[in-house]
Amino acid sequence: MYFQPEIETMPRAELQALQLERLRESLRNAYENVPLYRERFDAAGVTPDDLESLADLPRFPFVVKQDMRDNYPFGLFARENGDVARIHASSGTTGQATVVGHTAADLENWGDCFARGIAMVGGTRESTIQVSYGYGLFTGGLGAHAGGEAMGCTVIPTSSGNTKRQVQMLKDCKTDILCCTPSYALLIADTAIEMGYNPATDFQISGGIFGAEPCSENMRQEIADKLGLQYCDVYGLSEIMGPGVAMECAERGGLHIAEDQFYCEIIDPDTLEVLPDGEVGELVITTLTRECSPMIRYRTRDVTSISAEPCACGRTHRKIGRILGRTDDMLIIRGVNVFPSQIEQVITEFPEVATQYQIVLTTRGPLDHVELQVETEPDFPIDEVRALEDLRGRLGAALKGNLQVAVDIKFVEPKTIARSEGKAKRVIDLRGETH
Amino acid sequence: MISQLTVFLANEKGRLAAACRTLADADINLAALFIADTADFGIVRIFCDRPNRAAAVLAEAGFRASITPVIAVSVADEPGALARLLGFCHESSMNIEYGYCFSVAGGTAVDVLKIEGEGAEEVLAAAGFTILAPEEVYVVDED
Image (cartoon, rainbow over all chains, first blue to last red; front, side, top):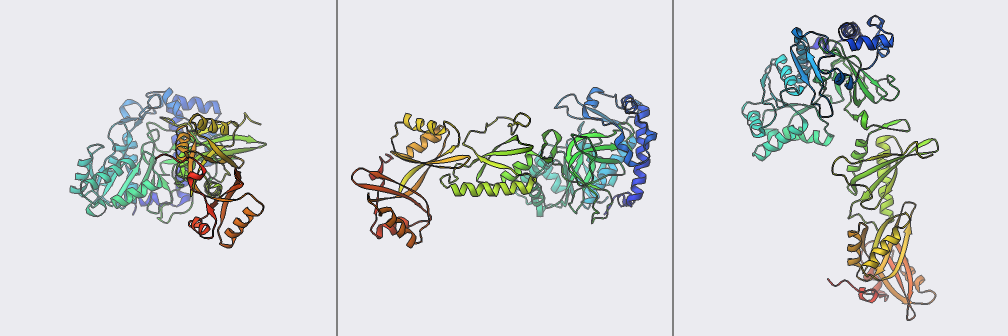
């Protein structure tokens, strides 16, 4: 089931022609109306007319979050106040807030993008959609709301909070689709169970659109099982639009990018070179239709890969994989991108090993050497050297299989690894210091 | 079965000394100490008085220490005593994980064995081997 079949299943060649046409227009909008882009393009020696094919886009410079902070609040707007219908802002928890403006047409496109995800979980204009994302400057609530309205659903704007009432609405109003963060979905499910319901069978709900925070595979499964629904992962960021930039179809092999609205690239965050489809790197997004806040080659710092494999659902838009982490956390070991979260995931599969760990990176000759320091759980039979060696072998093999990098495992004494109240220092990078 | 104190130590300078100092400060006397070492870590096996208390003292000081049940067999301090014991174990299909021996005063020796599985002690006793009780080897814990 599609929301906009002509767009969602558009043949690739036709889609690329549409992207090129819209990309030129977007570059022009940015160049002509936003001083920062004009300066940057001029400095790089390019003008929008230099874009002859999509392959020319890497000639254009990147923008980053700091550019938005530096131009707070309206410095990157390409429209005057009269044309701006709404603004959203990022939380600013890690610095100056960033403001993004939307024209009426921008909001309409946003609603369409999100509505495609509603269709992906089987929603139609007959469906009831409950939006339990927070409403406000955060894009989650109003983004999902716009999607529901675009589809013509009955929208229940519960916003977040008052979880018992959420459950009551879910039950009484026969909600079909729930939209919220994964952690809130789980809380709603658990609250319903506490209230004596089995939401998987007692409630009508059949679909969920969850995003805006990371979610492990286990948690995702738990949510789907407890609520009895098809889980749709939604990707988005307020700098680019909000939820709906990419959404996951029933095939579960990744999230279809709204490629008629966004042009995505994957780059190596160190060399800044564009990587081919399938390779893991930083996601860079260029908006194709946004009027008020065009973003040209915005570095999201989110790490994923793009798949161009045809999807059984019939949509032709390429897919991004799940977000593996942020570039800030990424380690490059022997040329392979490794995230501490991947290591953590493997460790949690070994109950014999304590969850505290430390990665020590050194250089041995020309090669990076990775040592993972772990402690065994207190009840592990430390008397048996064989058991320790066996554990070391199994953990090493699991890590090698998962990371594609050989890891030397070192069992350490308790308390060797510093416990931290807040964020633990998991990685000690001594490369370059030891030769 | 008797209680052997087992301590996991990083293969680093000073760790063994620190562990022994901790036991000394708790006034625990060691009768024997053996080390199995690997590149990264060592497993230290200790016979000492009040082993449960010793393990608790070490754990409190941040060491990974535990109690391992092992079999102590008293044999004559003469050629062939160990060979006879091990020969019997082999014939009885006992798998020995590790072992060590030490002589004690009075012309006897103690052969300590960690044997895979359970029931080995009974089989050895039934075959006439002299199995040592904890109080014959060390001062047992009071509680």
